[in-house]
Image (tube, rainbow, N blue to C red; front, side, top):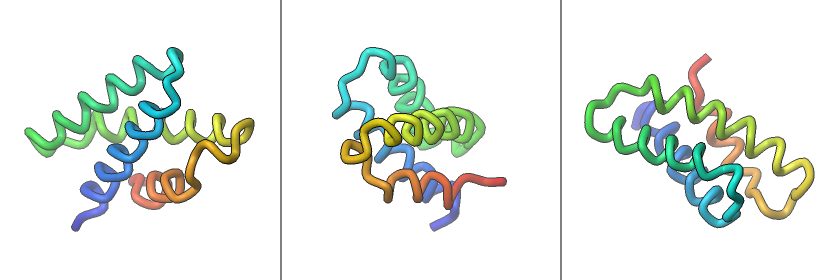
Length: 85
């Protein structure tokens, strides 16, 4: 499994977190992230996946600071570890 595929899987996990949070401010990000995962699955072009994956990572880190128990650290770690430099 390549790093891009691992990053895709981490993005799928992030969508699950945003879905569980049910916060309106994440609706657009969730929608875009789900679209990019589907797009990557279709054409294997990761550009959108990386773009919205970075945004998801930033938002999850910020949310975790004020709500440490609602976001699993492993999801954040997987996004960070597999994000290309």
